[in-house]
Image 1 (cartoon, rainbow, N blue to C red):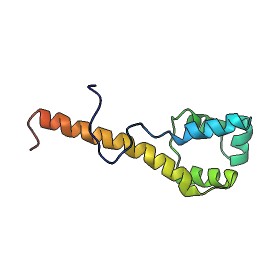
Image 2: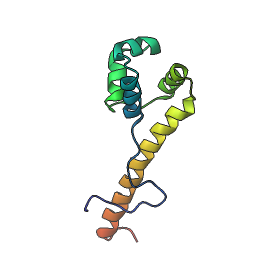
Image 3: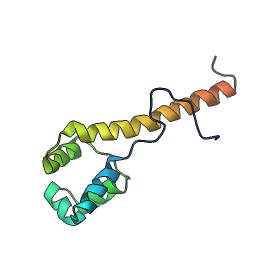
Length: 106
């Protein structure tokens, strides 16, 4: 495909956004988003943006999620980092391919 780029050492499939994982957890547990937002001490739009993958997990949000679920802050940050790194690696590979294709990079 024209949109595929060779990136070594990275999964072929994009890692899930932490918001997608959070959405699945909340749906499985039948936890209303408004109630969960109150529990975290954040606004409903903040939680909605996160589960719609329109907002990244910040350090503060990772700490709040770790307290809510009893796991580590690093768990949530690693999910976000893996998601972001995958996209960044492909963007860099595309840039390199585009530049090589135009003869500007040796």
